[in-house]
Length: 115
Image (cartoon, rainbow, N blue to C red):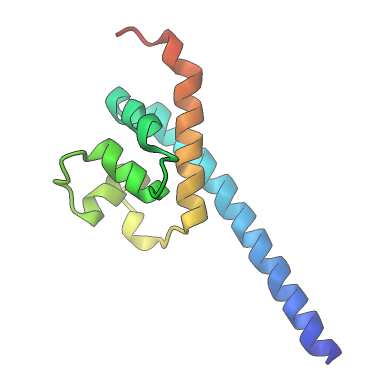
């Protein structure tokens, strides 16, 4: 019994640590993407659709980058996550944090962007 309880506790701690790493990595990747890759229009649309009821973070990215739904999943992933996107399995938490990081960067710099 004690070994089972200890194992469950250890697995829970590892899962929590992995989720925290995903969250931090996604946030920083989102800020980097917003600063170095994203177009202003993408970021403005992302702000509009992110957090809308029934919209996942991945749906928000798709609507922001590809409002006419012309990109396949691989191209969308490459646009957001880079050339090696196919080599990774991004968690929902990573993508949520990515959107948050991109959105916060845009909020910080938007007042300085000329129209």
